[in-house]
Image (cartoon, rainbow, N blue to C red):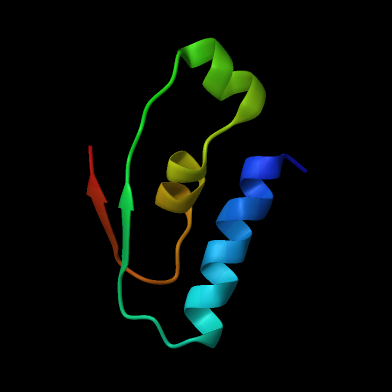
Length: 57
């Protein structure tokens, strides 16, 4: 499992256990190669998140 997947999972679990209503975070993009190899927390949360996201770039 990628490190970013672990970070995204930690955010999702914290939000679920703490009854969070909204996650606010900065959305950053990297090169396609870097995203392919390392992944990204922003992309992981956009794919699956149990609470609404507010992203700012």
